[in-house]
Length: 328
Image (cartoon, rainbow, N blue to C red; front, side, top):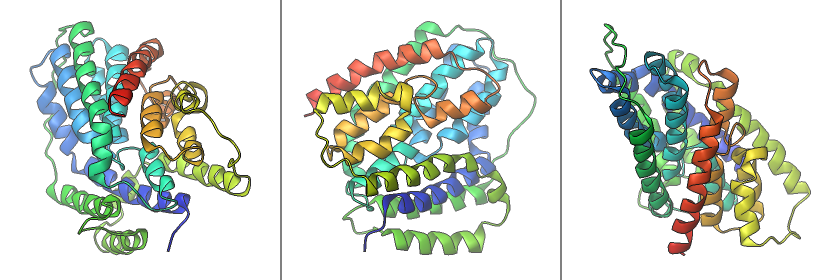
């Protein structure tokens, strides 16, 4: 039995939001961040935080990481430039897995008409070259443009909580099963809802509920509107050249957001590589490039340096095209 993509999208995002909230409450990211910042200069700390973002963001932790960066950046002298690099690094770091960000989740589900069609292994094999290139590019940029200013020290210590971390890992295990297509351990959407729902009711409590970033569900709501508009008024007669689709997903994200385009492009082509690479790069295209950028622009305490964000977008656009055509 199939289920419409926005409905599956809602429940998968809900499980991941609960897992991310529990990781945030566990303070393990705060703990790691304090270890990184201690006795480091801004250049070294930024490079280490880039590595941290690329490792953790693929587990739907972009918003948790960005919130932590906003707090840590107050101890830096070059706040705007450093925060821009770290936010962009987190956005690109999240592209590695089918559940790494809101765009990948919907694309993975929509291409399968309500069920993921790519296994996690196949998805990672597609995105790994761009992810590695992203890590190397951001490390290089940070090395050359970040100064070796001293970071303000703090006397506070952070202790992380094992119970919340264990809870989030179990939820991520359920989500992993949903995206683990055609493998021994796999779940359909109903199995994810039942197992995840029962587990959350039994063990979650009210603490993680208060920590959930409910702003994550704004794109989910938009996905319902866009999907059902296209469901009743399909674009089946539209045939676009691959380069137009790639341009729409990447350059078009500057005006229409990669999140919005991730709801539309799966109806125009079934080429997952075209969609994923164009949307991933488009997520760096300024204020409207991604929901993460919109969120920090609207709610962030430290402003993003948008000229630098567009420069990063201009760097990654040819890089993504080169990788894409080399792997065709």
